[in-house]
Length: 235
Ligand code: MN
Image (spheres, rainbow, N blue to C red):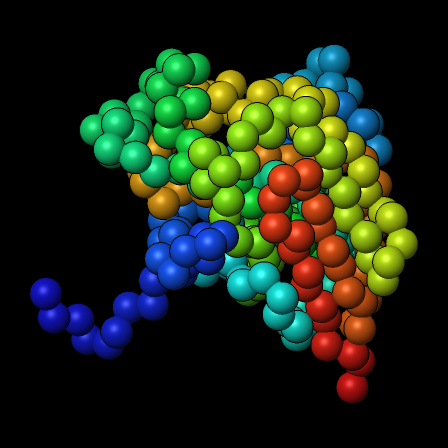
């Protein structure tokens, strides 16, 4: 195969390995924690979670300092458990997965931040326009190293949190997910044929708020590598 230029393959580190996880697509879940659905003005009793996506090259490595995103006066952090999918069984069948098949498709877990231009998202909602510029911008999906399931073990009882400059902003438990991890993979597989390399941001707990240039964010999920991301100071 000869390409006009070298194609860049977005990828994420794997904890304890030199091999990297190539990212195929990034799917995200909206309003998958009841407390966050309420803080965004929704009703978790009446509305189900839903999906949106980001480009694969929105991922960034752990530990980097990023330029502050353009075109926003209200950039929000959303700390999320990230699920990475792989496996021969998934490659053979990525659609209409059972809960057992969905569970078997999980390669590992990581901590991610779904950065959101909240002002642009609010405008998009008001005008019934797409969310792409609010959600799918450059560096909008930092991800920690992926911990394979065999090392991570049971994740359902884990705590999830985000600190900004050492101050606790977001806190929740993975067990509070409205759609469990197998349920959301199975649901997503009714819309798309899922492939090895697909990653899913599983939704954010309550406490989303604004970050500014110079801030340092630390996202944690028990048993997983801590995600640490900074923004360059204002110049
Ligand atoms: Mn989110």
